[in-house]
Length: 204
Picture (cartoon, rainbow, N blue to C red):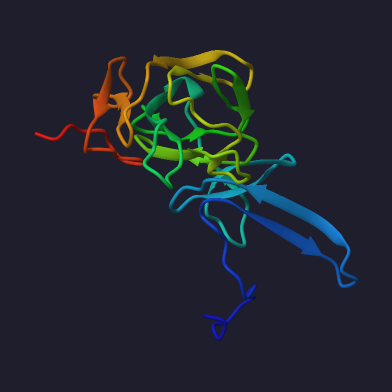
């Protein structure tokens, strides 16, 4: 709506990650931000020269939003043997019912690979995040694939503290495995009820 009052960029921002650059009148870059997965109705803003999750306060002072500990995160579902043309993926779940969790700095790994999430990303309370294990760049992607023959998935904090771990055996094509109920310790195959980015369930 560029005919409305105020300043307008002429472009939108991607809710699953994007880059924003600020240039001076001589096209010299003077500031930049790279961000990842964002939450509905929350902004990110500076505080003491660091970026954090905020209440939206355009034109006013930034107001921080409290985040929960990364210990609330769980490896919730994974697909290591997709149908032809599909991609491996895993899903994170936030067990906290009242606060989001910051994902930046976390480590995800398999039996023979390790990847750190560097983008400024957040996961909503009781929320789910699907991450594609396809060795591609981007906030929704991991730089490894999942071994279909079986392996171990790990989740570590930015201080390398183990938060969650799960081992699995040979995987059936197009059948995911995961926790049921969400975020608990049991592992269940989901034949016909694959649910990336949503709650796990079984067909009855």
